[in-house]
Image (tube, rainbow, N blue to C red; front, side, top):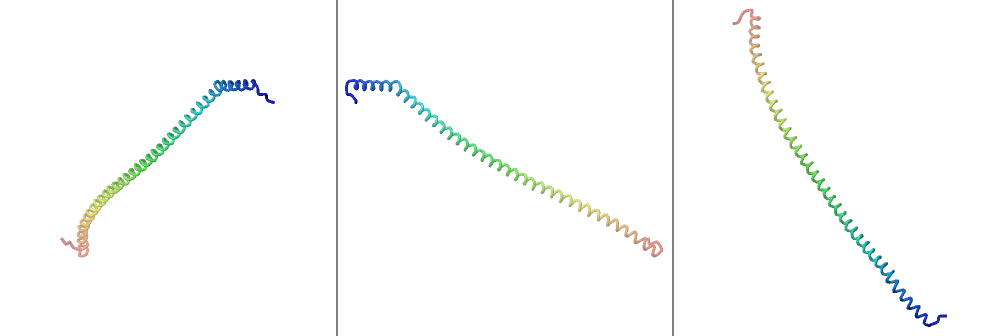
Length: 142
């Protein structure tokens, strides 16, 4: 059985002193270290969250810039296409005008050659008709 005497009180006082000393030497420093470690972990988590947000924001900006660059590139390609088509139309128009001018010049030249050939044939026809007439009549007409 348990005796309730002075040793019990001494043991209780001894226990309380031990508890107080352990609290001072062991428990408080451990709690302080755990609290500091939790604070460091919270700071790291906050930093990780902010860096993740910054990385996501940077990625969004990067994707936006890529889209803008693609749009600019497509606009430049379209502008170059339109310039090429316009240059093509102008070149075809200039070539058509040049061809028309050459065709007209060739027509005039062919027309003048035809007229020259007609005049020459007309002269030859007259000479042949005189020669044929002279042969038929067997005398000179002139």
